Length: 322
Image 1 (cartoon, rainbow, N blue to C red):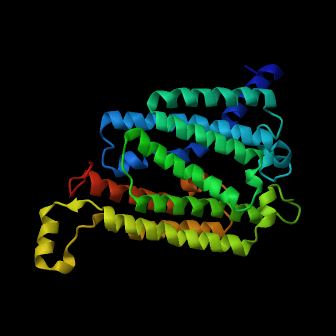
Image 2 (cartoon, rainbow, N blue to C red):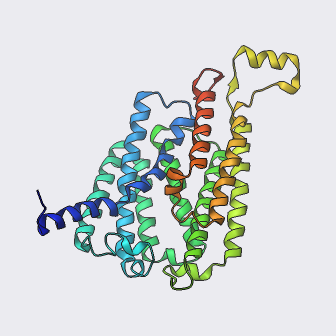
Image 3 (tube, rainbow, N blue to C red):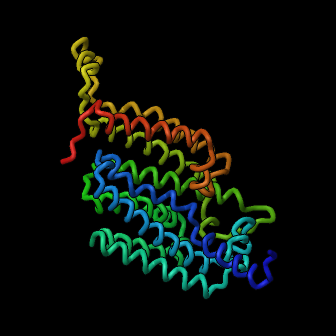
């Protein structure tokens, strides 16, 4: 059966409505599970369900923010070599339909949030307000735009902590802030490389950045990221319980292991080094795609998650949940 032009147009609008929500970006919202995972309570059904509901709420909220940003940026996006193919910029998705979609997504997000936790709802609300301010002008201010992008990531992590009432140490907070700033500055560094030649500046703040400055940001926050994670593993590692570790401690104080999470440090350093190399290869404009497509990053993340899982959930250590 051949689609008529009207049917084809409807199909295109449906696909465009999905694309404009940018579901691939939802991978960033997995940060919400950090609290329940690192607190050793991931397999407590009630807490996991709460985290999953929070994840859904943030997915709808972030999609609503992306739609607002695309509506606001439609003229600039049409000048961008890649963004001009976005549903609204290309004209496939009418602006009025995008507005309705954004309002519905935001409304559903708020409805889920208020039923979860008042503080979580407040964070989602603040996130949306911050994104509106970003779309309306703050994204055009150099450095401020990076800070706001990073703030959104930090809010995801702590939204997940509030919804399950988990404690996250100050070292973990520093780690989250450093990683967020590392990813945000790397994104701007890659965007800066796209302009030039026949490609005009499509984001005002990019005109105020120099590659040398962004290079220093990337290097500074990369170092801060692995160092703050190292400090977190040193101060927050669970106590070893298996006889093997106890025997080592008896053999020599040098082999005393009560900091098992420190085994993740080499993997963390490798992952940061790999991502930094991709930044300087100008491939980090869309971090979420790299996390899904770069084999080295996928292996590093998989190994990191496996190590943390074994340390926290396999019985080789005791996790304090109080």
